[in-house]
Length: 371
View (cartoon, rainbow, N blue to C red):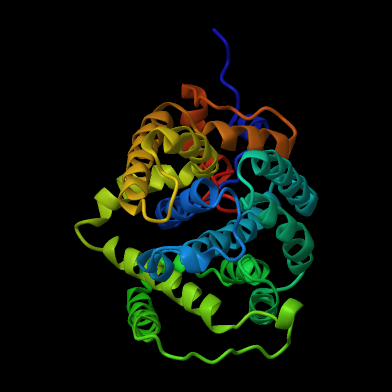
């Protein structure tokens, strides 16, 4: 009979960062996937990969409720995951930033390959912004990082259209992680509700002004290429995305919460796999469905729902047998430069129960995906 290995040996063989999983973050990540998918179908199928100048061609409902509303959620979650991973990786290695740099480098390579079939995809932007902004920012505390995040957000939103706010949003997520906001979500119902009311009021106000055709001022204090970008539209998108987050967090506290978590959290845990596989699915299905114009909204919505149903079922079934999604597993192995256990055997599961501080699964993953 083979003697059982001590929990410390199993910890050395494992490459997960220990800690209690924050299921609300997984659920938010899965929710963000749903909204991003519709925009990606328009950009890759209808506009053939072009992004600049296409927003005004989207159906008005998509402009006001989806465009630039969901990628801020992903970006903030990426920053949160970065902060949590950095803190927990420091318990496993003396050089956690080196591990994170390698992790972001691997993500960049994945993004470059993905860019070939999905021009304008977000992984390259997240990886580059992480390397250029988050790694240096990791030497600051939470409050200082929050100040830098606000400055980066306001500057980027005025200089670069589209992905300009990403460095600031990543920094905001990192600051929130350092201030331990994610861990306190379950205890801050009042603050979440107040945020929902305020952000929803701002979002509804913006939508009403847009629907009435109001002349909105061009607000830009620092210039930029071609005169820069007005600050108001990206801030409206961020406010709406955060309103969605607060609303979902409140729903998770209702009887609907377990059902929403059961559907969305597995998708969020496999966000990298689902983000990549969605590209394959909608590129293969769009042609036979005849999707080729902005007027094909019903078919685009139908395709999105179909893909999301497939991914919800697939993610749930996969995670019943495996610890990570396929892409997440590859990413984790290359991050730590060792083979991570994919199927959790009984010995590891037993040790996990005995020593959860060292063998617990990661509370969240770096970026818009599980790690």
